[in-house]
Image 1 (cartoon, rainbow, N blue to C red):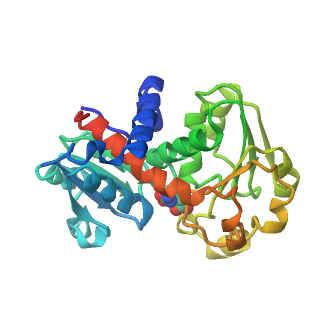
Image 2 (cartoon, helix red, strand yellow):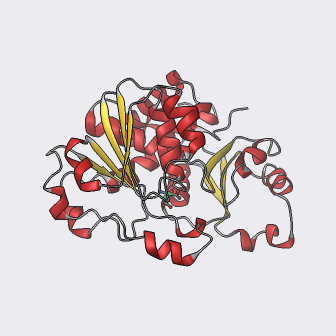
Amino acid sequence: MRHLIDITDLSQPELDSLLDLASEIIENPGKCADACKGKKLAALFFEPSTRTRLSFEAAMLDLGGSVIGFSDGGSSSAAKGESVADTVRTVGCYADIIAMRHPKEGAPLLASRHAGVPVINAGDGGHNHPTQTLADLLTIKREKGRLGSLNIGFCGDLKFGRTVHSLITALSRYEGIALTLISPKELPVPEYLKASVIEKNNMPFTETVDMEAALPELDILYMTRVQKERFFNEADYIRLKDRFILDAYKMKNARPDMSVMHPLPRVNEISVKVDDDPRACYFKQVLNGKFIRMALILTLLEVLS
Ligand code: NCD
């Protein structure tokens, strides 16, 4: 049984074929319209979500399948004290595949050991978010025509931003990726990631607090929100939340072909004036997110049409 808990659960050839399959679906959306007929996806969301949950649901519906689940753990028996293991063992009796988001790091991994059906990590605490990474990789490939030889800037909350952790891990498998890590001193990339991914794979990287100085060198700028819900102290959040704001003025110093990415939701960190700049890719990521999740569901359920 296959699960997707960490982006490295996919081998490089598997990742490449997922990206190819998503591109095929984009070219020919009707291709898989009935591929998951009779199958059910359970979306178990113990944390807020707009894009991830709805794109999973839209993906399954577009494959001809159906969807059950909840968007608030408080409305499930977790509120009565049920364990994640028992919840997913139950859901595995009703659904063919589970997408789970949970505030506790490792909850989807635990779920995968008890569910009896494939489990997809739709975000676990400040840890990982592999399906956002799939959407990001598809977007980079379509925008840049390649996944290697890129100077990528990550900006914002690199400590708690799970999308950053999974994307850096995925990028470590490509040649010629250089990282510019732009964050407040309080929110750097975690040491474990630096040691076990960035340094282990000899990825060139620089850490800086100066977004404007870094900007002209970048092929891609991946902006992130300061993760309010992971802070213990509101005063720290307020102090750090608006440290980096990308606006039209700063975009003048960026390369004419620099792509601006963001997993969304955006709070203040990208001015809405940037939305009309052709370099803004964040709503393309949203759309690509549905197609790559279609490809992922088809692959994990082994129902390729
Ligand atoms: C991200 C997440 O949930 O980690 N959102 C998403 O799934 N697209 C980013 C965030 O919440 O800041």
